[in-house]
Amino acid sequence: MPQTSPSRMMQFRLRLRHSLMGPHVLAFLPALALAGFWLGGESVLLLVALGVPVLFSLAGGFNFDTAVGASPGRKTDLTDAHGAVAMADQALEQAGQSSMATACILVDIEGFEALENRFGDATVQTARDLVLGRLRTLLRKDDIAVRIGDARFMVLLGPALRLDLEALLQISNRLQSALEEPASIDGTTQCLSAALGFCSSVRLADSATGQDMFAAASAALTEALANGPSAIRAWTDSIKAARSARQSLRGEAARALENGQIQPWYQPQLCTSTGRVSGAEALVRWIHPERGVIAPKQFLETLEEDGRMQRLSEVVLAHALTALRGWDRAGLDVPRVSVNFSMSELRNPRLVEALKWEIDRHDLTPQRLGVEVLETVIAETTDGIIVRNIAALAKLGCQIDLDDFGVGHASITSLRRFAISRLKIDRSFVTRVDRDEDQRRMIAAILGMSDRLGLETLAEGVESVGEHALLAQLGCDHVQGFGIARPMPAEQLVTWIRAHNSRIADTPPLDRHSS
Image 1: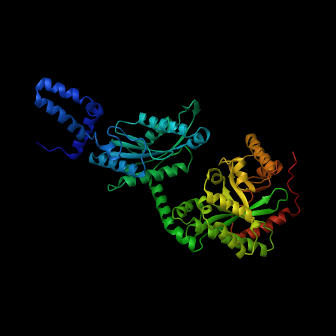
Image 2: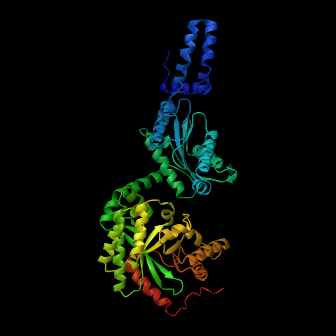
Image 3: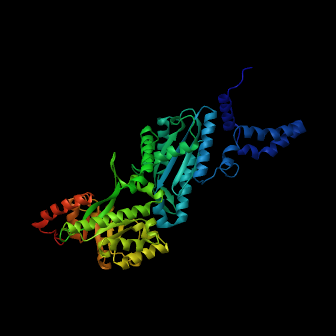
């Protein structure tokens, strides 16, 4: 009699598990054993008592849950990255044994943070359970859905004959549609958005591991998130090439920081009353000898992961103060240069001492340095070192700017506690302010509050003359954005300021009080 191939045997086991096996069979084991005893005596009783668990095991009934540390017969709801990779390894192994395919789909939910800010942790957990329930409702018996982060979920598809791009797009679209259906959560109707990234085992090499498939799906999800809150992306050769390029840049970033390729460019800020330059913000750029100018989002995360943000801060600060002295020598009036400080940099216990030394070394006063701190840092921090550093910088005389105001939910008490000097209004409030009445009312409310608190204001992301003019009329003190000038090297800013000063010399300033 011809032998059965491993592939056909695996398919037989899968069909057997689908049709006959499951935890419900074990639940009836005592009854089955008793029936066997009455019908055939002890021999049949032993056959039933031992045979059913053996068949269940052969069908794979015990494998998956115990591999990831869940209770027998129950799929886990939450696992970490290590557990997710272990699950992906086993999915690949099962699919390979049957000469079939599997796939990893990662889902990122947007909206949990807003729910937490408004209703609290319990409501967010209810929403997470809802998302997981909806995923599992749509999946087959052999498919797995787990949560792997605060807002991230993983789906592993059981062995299937056809999991090509078209099939996976259809599955992903069905999952997304179900997840984005309005839901009643704690008495309120909520709408969440879902971004998905996926990778099929057929797109990977035969030697690929669960780590490879999970990483590929993660890269696809990153691409989806970069293209909108409800995008879907598959792992493709172009994403693979982009990932290889990022990995290559990762190896170069540390060297670039030390050899001077990473340095700040400067975006001018204008006073809306006089039209003159009131400052400049230092924005880091990587001037790559072969790839040109590389945006910060492509390398800042790498530097942070490598623990080099403090070194980056030192480099940017030294360049910015040197540029400020250079503008002074060129006879230009640039009152202040502003530098961004991340949360990790603000945790440095030697920050104030190091910054004061740099200011003295460049023969400048602290009043000419602006320290930009994200509103999310102010709103979320309970770190005593950060609080003390910001207070000490303000006491030293540095201007403390609260960056991206309006997105981090900082309280009025926080504005006082951290001695904030100026609010930088986030660009999301500025866009189309000259054409959108709701935007205009929001800006007017922020400016009114700032005026009563005695805080200066700067609107960032100004991209049109209309936005600039209306902001001036509403009483915003300063503006910056691509509509005024893009970031540029320090020496180019000299030329730009001179040309700008010539343009405004015979031009009356914008009238804040005109209708």
